[in-house]
Image 1 (cartoon, rainbow, N blue to C red):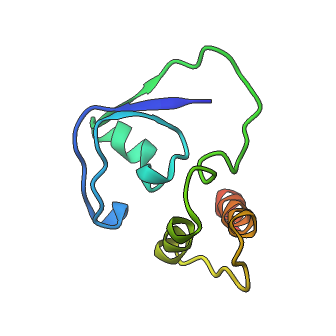
Image 2 (cartoon, rainbow, N blue to C red; image 1 turned 180 degrees about the vertical axis):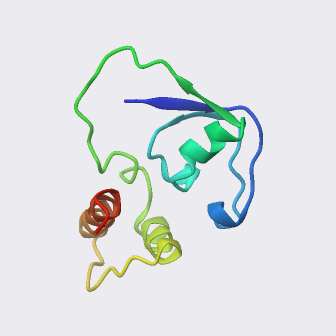
Length: 105
């Protein structure tokens, strides 16, 4: 999976006023708040070379998070969870929202 290396601390409205810390992250990591390209553009991060192409699990970034963290992430992104209360169901809603956002829906 593609990765970026964040070289400087970043905080701003576009990151929900949450600190993005230096380190290596997978593209799509929820801790980057979808700001990967912006961080690269302003010189706070750099893309790392992709050594090989592999299948991407769209739910991978969400699996380490607890249901409470997932609910908070959904709320911060304005994603309606409907009746989803189980971790797997919440992840499915978040992945669907990511897919819809990526396709411009």
